[in-house]
Amino acid sequence: MKAIIKNKIYDTEKADIVAIGDGFNIYVTKNGNWFLEVRGINKNTIKSINENQAYLRLCNLFALDAIKKYFPGRIEEA
Image 1 (cartoon, one colour):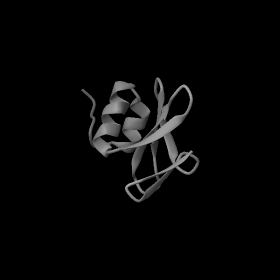
Image 2 (cartoon, rainbow, N blue to C red):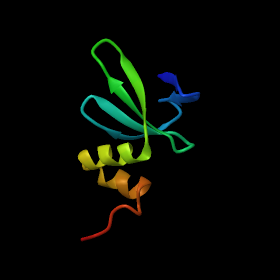
Image 3 (cartoon, rainbow, N blue to C red):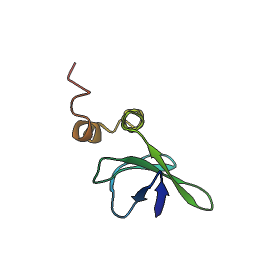
């Protein structure tokens, strides 16, 4: 699936899928732009998100491996 948002092409086939949530997938492009593929009943949509929104979504999903890979400086051992 592809979408153009603010003059940027978001393509689920070219981006890395980072995590799968309930009703959405989180992707990051090779240029470091984050987006969601939101799964709907009749069609899917793409929504761009910023880095902080991506981080918070990953935290809510307890996607520890993804957080360590994409946000290594934001977490540390207790």
